[in-house]
Length: 133
Image (cartoon, rainbow, N blue to C red; front, side, top):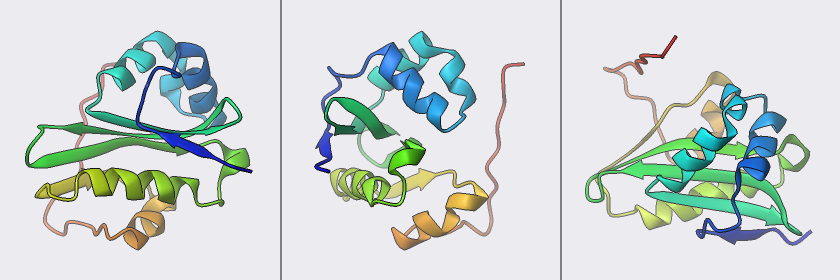
C-alpha cells in the first residue's frame, strides 16, 4: 500500500471528511459542512490517501509565529498501526519546527503516541473547555 500525503485541501469535501470522522466515532462527524469549513480555515491540514480514499488527517491552528495547536489527528481504524499518524505528525512538526510552543490535547489512549513524538505533559496547567450545549 502506497499512502500519499498532501498539504493541499482540494480533495477534501464534506462527505469524505465525515466518513473519516465517523470511522473513529467522533461527534464532529455529525456536522459535515461545518467540519469541512473548519478544516479549510485551519492554518495547515495534512491528509493521507490510499487510492483516492481519505484514511487520515491532522491539522494545525496557529498564530503564524509562535504557537501551533494540533487539534485533529485521526486515522481510519482500518489503517491504524501502520505509521500513518506518526508520518502526519512528523510532517506537521517539521513545518512548525521554529515555533516556540506546539500544543495538543492527548486523550489517555494516545498519550504514549505523542510522548514518542517528543510531547510531554505540562505539570502546572490543565486543559479546559467551554462547550456549546
